[in-house]
View 1 (cartoon, one colour):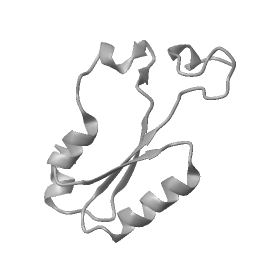
View 2 (cartoon, helix red, strand yellow):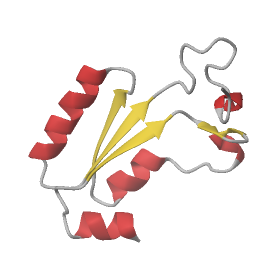
View 3 (cartoon, one colour):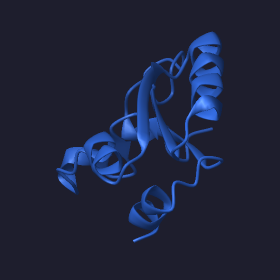
View 4 (cartoon, helix red, strand yellow):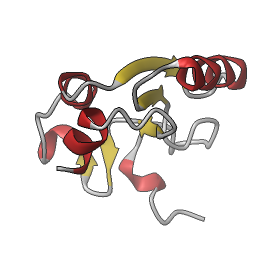
Length: 98
């Protein structure tokens, strides 16, 4: 409901950065959902952008574009959980690992 309301009211100052790493604590997010999150937000009237979540310049540019929008914004930051960690990159084992 909050997603729909924000789109309906055109809450243009609302910017959500979503860590889109496709991993949950139990494994791939496909174990618990088949929802296309960007499509869900887009259908509710949000500006939706997808960026490399490891690229700070791309994130900054997306935030700038979101600030110019007359709608709420979702920035889907595609990331690899545990990137750079030996034997943990892309794995649910990253959750709680030292």
